[in-house]
Structure formats: C-alpha cells, structure tokens
Image (cartoon, helix red, strand yellow):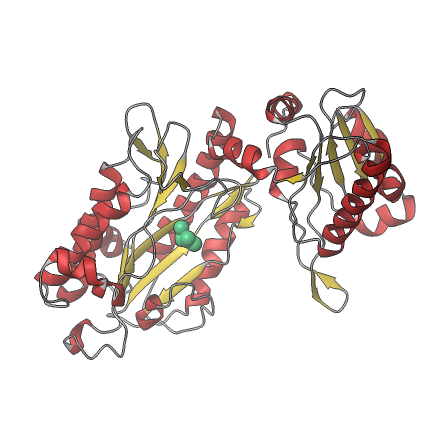
Length: 436
Ligand code: GLY
Ligand code: MN
Ligand code: MN
C-alpha cells in the first residue's frame, strides 16, 4: 500500500482540477457474503482507494472542489464493542487526521448530509457500482435535486462518469505505482520460478497452486490478484481453469497463470513448462511459435504505437506457425481475414494492468486504438490452445495449451518487461527442470 498521504492529496487535487464545477461521490465496495455469516475477504473499491488510501468498508468519499470542505469522508465511527470483534476502525477523527479529510462524519449521517452537499452542485459525478442499494439512493437523490432545481434554479443538470477523468489518471502509473507493481511482479516471479522448480509427475495441481499462493503471502503480498490458474494437460486449453485438482503426469505441460497483489497493485504472469524434464517435439514446436509471437509483440511496445500493435504482431507469428505446422491451411491473410485461427487463439494479446488486473482506461479513442505512452503498463500474453476434440488436426497436437504472459511498462523509448525474471526460453526452462 502506498502510505504517503501527500500522494493521495495530490491525486485528489489533480482529479478536482479536471472536474467541472460540481460534486463527486465515491462509494466503498460492499461487503460480499461468501456463505451464511461468513464474508469474502474485504477489498476496497479501487477508485476510492486510489483517491484516499482508505481501505475500510461502509465509507463514502465526497469531493467538492472550490468549497470550504473539498474532501469529505463518511466512515464507520469508532465502536469499542465492534472493534473487539472485527478490528480497529479509523473513525471520524482518524479520517480527518490520518486520511486528511477536510470534514468527516459517521456514515450514518450520509443520508442527512449528502442532499445538502449535492443540492446546489452544477454537476454530479457518480458511477454506478457494485453497491446496488447505493446506486438507487444516488438516483433518488438526483431526482430530488432535479425537482428542487425547478424551484431554486440551482442543482445538478446531469450525472457524469468520474471514470472519464479518474481512469485516465489511473492508466498512467506514477513512480510509486511502478514501484508497487514491480514489487507485486517480483513476488509473482519468485512464485512462478519456485513452481517451475518444484513441479513433479504425480503431484496434484493444487499442490503447486498452494506453493504459488504461499509464496505470495510469505513475501507480503495480500494474496493472488485473481484465482491462480494451475492447468496441466488438456486443462491448459480452458482459459480460466481454476479447479486445479488434477494429478499431473510426465509428458504433460503445466500452464500457470498467477499474479500476486501487493499494496493494491496486481501482477499477471503466465508460464507453460513440462511436468517432466523436457518438452515433447510437438509441445516444443508450438511453444517456440508462442514464444516468438510474444517476443514479436513485446518488440512493438513503444510510445505512439497503437495499442493493438502487439496483438497484430503476435497474430502474424501465431498464424504463420499454425500454417507451418499444418494446423491451419491457406495463407496468413486468409486465416486472419476468416478468423479461422480463432479455433486455437481466441483472446486478445493485451490488457492494461494496475490496481485491477484488467485495469481501467479506454483502449479506443475516436474510431481507432489509442496510442501507447510512457507510464502505461500492459500485459503481452499470446497463446495457442488446441481443443482436445479438434478433428481438423493430427491427434498428436490435441489438448496442447500454451500461454506466455509478461507485464510491460511503456517507457520513453520502448517497453520494459517487468516480469523478465521468470525463465521462458526452452533452454532456460529445460535447464531448470533438469537441475530440479
Ligand atoms: N489472468 C487473467 C489474464 O491473464 O488476463
Ligand atoms: Mn494472466
Ligand atoms: Mn492477463
């Protein structure tokens, strides 16, 4: 977590400087019930977290630039009894002192105070979120303020999405954010390397999942940024396989897609390697295609290049490889035009990475893909997945699933691969497997 309060103050200042005159409301993520009276581990809404660093549930942040109290926090009040059961709360004083709120109130006072704060605001910034009941309250509030405007002549003329401003800010990572991402990625890299060393025929996928997740926590991460995918054999052809309950055999490949979360920032790394010591000839052939496509994609990353340049570069190499090995027929252009390659490669090559694993920020501006720029972080993750029942290919190819995913920071003059510490060439992987 970024603890320097000045950083959050600067983010709020920057956000408010971009706002039209009005009021912005950010709601904490709701607590989610896992079953009966057990909740899922709490995770704060990333917009609220980005602006405040405040990680407790039942909170609301109101930003009102140009007023006496630009930053108001509504929070759970201190409560001796509840804190004994559920942990310490910052409370109203903590919100002011530790989180630098200009004003702070118990969350119970939100219903009474928020209308007054919004009543005369020319614009209301609010994005409907996962707290459905709160979305309704905001709609009711807007309807009330709208009626009022008829009489008073003041009040919100509309509701705007704060994400159009805030998510542009989140898309460009500051030095502190890059530092947090590097930390998350270093932890994930250690976990992947440990998994690559410890995997053995006869182990179950969940044993390797346990090693991966153990490494995340052991190194101070908050846990996996998304459920760790540990997919051996045919399971690797299921993109979001999370059962992780199969016994691994010699001759299988193992695909691990796992990233630690550290300080609210996500790693997202995939490696695919043999459960035994060596790739089979067919596994190696496809692996080399995916690796070449990934390297071609990474090589395109630099400022002013279109966001989809890595995807296009990866696709050319993947399609050429599929044709070369007889999994596709015809020409590259025809395969791309007809999308016949989608039998084997059905996802995109990149997404933004940050506080969310599929991070915020638009991919298109106007009618084209946006240009990459320094400070953006994206994944590069081509793959090939031969369906186990694919009758158009030789049986020897069926059930092979391979993905290679790295996290890349766009720099002034190119791209820096933040996850380069995990082996990915055939020689490096086989050396590690043999040594292990
Ligand atoms: N782990 C999710 C993804 O790679 O996009
Ligand atoms: Mn991934
Ligand atoms: Mn990814």
